[in-house]
Every structure is written in structure tokens, then in C-alpha cells.
Image (cartoon, rainbow, N blue to C red; front, top):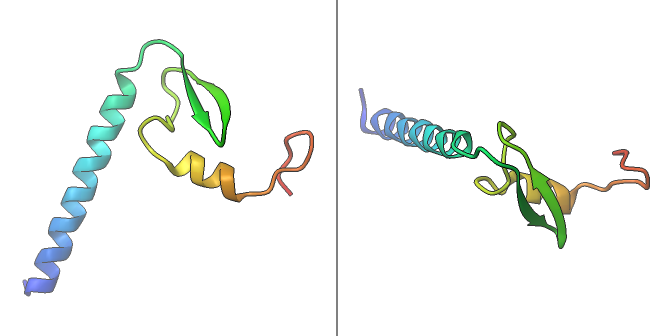
Length: 73
């Protein structure tokens, strides 16, 4: 295996290890808790993908337009 492929394999292993750690942290949440995204408060329940551990939700919430009534165009 060449050096480039070894590096890619290591990066993939690191990524998967990080995802596993994040998912395990989310699984430890047993009670609902509040998060603030874009200046608004949200309740996050156990067993739900949490913006507390991943900022994807905030990125989408701040960059995707939402019409009145909550529908996405």
C-alpha cells in the first residue's frame, strides 16, 4: 500500500472513531435538555441526533430558508 492510501485509511479510521465517540455521548443523554440554535431555544430528547454534539443542525438552520408555517421551499 502506498503512503497516500495509508494516510487515507488512517483518516477514515480516525473519522469513524470520532463518529463512534460522538454517538456514544449522545446515547448517554437520558433526559431532555435545551439547546440554542440561531438565537432560538429547542428541546432535545434522548435518542435524537443532537446539535449539542454536532453543529450540522445549526449550519442547516441558519442557511436553509424556511417559509412561514415551518415548510421548507
